[in-house]
Each structure stands twice: as C-alpha cells, then as structure tokens.
Length: 372
Image (cartoon, rainbow, N blue to C red; front, side, top):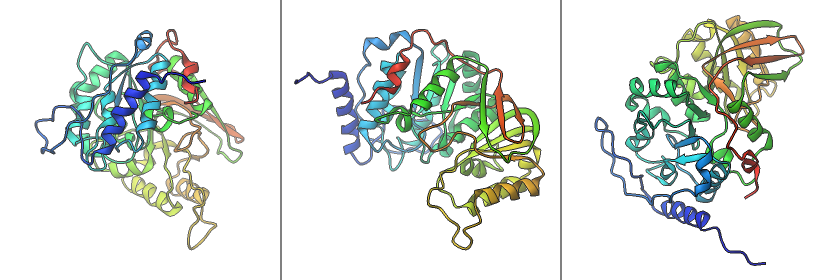
C-alpha cells in the first residue's frame, strides 16, 4: 500500500543532503573573534522539529570533530531522539562542512560558547568522533561554560575524539560527563543496539550505577576514587597540556580502536613517563577493537601482554574487559565522578553512587530502538 512520505523526515534529509553535496561549507554560527578567520559558505538550516518533542529534556547537539559522511544517518539520529521526546537544538551543526571537519574551528567552538545562562540544555550530545576537538580547546570559554553546566546538572555525552572536550571540562571546571552513545554513530544506526540504548536510558535516569565484568584473571583489590579517562590516543596527546586532568588516587579508564598492541603500549608508556599512571589506584581497559590485528614480529605480543607489562612496570593493578569502546554494544557511565572498584579474582564491579540524571517521565524510550 502506498503511504505519504513523512514531511519532516523528507525535509531533514533534503537539508542534510544538500549540505553534503557542497565541498567547503560551514554552519550559521558567528566566528569567535580571537580565532584566525576561516571562510565558510552558509549551509541549509534544518527545519523546526515536530511538536511531539516538547515533553522531554532539552538536548543540544554539538559537532566538534569530523563531518557527517551520511546525511541519512544523521537524519535518523535526529528523528529517533525527537520521537523519544528529546527537544533537540543546534541540529544545523550536522550539515556543516569545512575540510574534513563539521564546520570551521570558530563554528565548532561556538557549539559550546553559544550556551547562555537561562537556556542551558539538560543534555549535550556529541554527533560523532573523528578528529578536530583538540583544535578547539584553547578557544572554548571554560571559565564561563563549566559553572553553567554544573549548576544546571547538564549531562554531557560522547566518546572517541570527544574525550578532548570531556577532559577539558573536567580539568578546567570539574564537570562530570558521560562515556556513552553519540548521535551519528549510535542513535543514527539503522538498527541501534538494544543494550546500548537500554544502558543509556537507565544510567541517565537513575542512580546508583553498578557494572559487573566477568574477568577470571583480575587482580583482587578494592579501590575508590575519581574514574576518568576515555580514548587512549586523545589522552596521550593531551599529556603535558593543561587539559589533561591531574587526578591523584583515581581509576583510569582507557579504550581505543584499531591500534597495534605496541602502539597501545607506547601511548601508555608516554602517560607513565609523564607521571600519570603511577598516581592511579587502578587502570581499566575497555574495548580496543583489534579484530584481525596481529603484531608483525610476534603474534603472541597481544593487548594482554601490554596490560601485564604496564601493571608490572607501574605497580598499578590493570583490569580488562570493561564494556565500552568503538563497538555497537556499549555501557553508559560517568567520567569524572567518584567510583568504587571491587575485584574478587573472578571479575570486578565498578559502582558510581552519584552523578547527574534526568527523570524518565515524558520520554518514549521505545522509540530509541525503532528500525528506520
């Protein structure tokens, strides 16, 4: 049977596709005055979202890193979140293009600098990773932004290259953020992971959070402290800058994608030589997505070899298998919040007693897993 096309869906797709067809575009953000000018071409603005989004929390989309390769996937992410009840803003950032980035540096920094007192969103959701967030760190007004987000209890969500922004928030203002799904990468999938969506909802609407990991060879320990970290490549490149948090007695979480074991070790050696690892109570490895990756010289030199070596040279317990990384199934959990880690030799549990949340009322969470 023939059905009429959804006009909102069609208009969104047309706007995003039109932006993707142009070579060097940027959005309608005003440039940051202190930055070197980059010449953008205006992009189409996405239309207003339908009225059914009014019941839930405000959610500001930010795109500090790479451009959106697929207009259709970006559109799915917008529609899926809108149908779940989130009130989305700044969605025009999804259509911006400048070189390989989602807009000029000024436009991408403005995703954060344009947040104003009295209109602070309840959620800030990264569009995707890639590269580019580190370029923005000197141009974000952390002194103004961090107090606004802390006072509003804003839930800042993302991973991968977005780690640079998350560590900036933590180092410059003690703002807790969340490792979790992103608009393009996860909410925009044709068939989102039910586990990922379920964990996103449960973590952001209730606390405490406890994550149990079955890992038979885990060292036995009890540790408490601030759990922090994210993408290892980004963390290693922040070493020596004011944007890598100075956390003593913390629990460092790391993940990455497609890196050879020796490269993982080299980045950890950099953090160790910078004095970061020895100050932690534990190091937790997430997923490193090393499918079909083998060391050229010694196939027995694996991520497990790296973990064992790092634990030995630092004297810090290393645990593996935490369910987060560049995979479809991922947990959602706070970064920069107090956590306790308990290991019994057969596995370990990480518990977060307190962090920002938003009430479940008004959300249609089933929409997050609808096929599109």
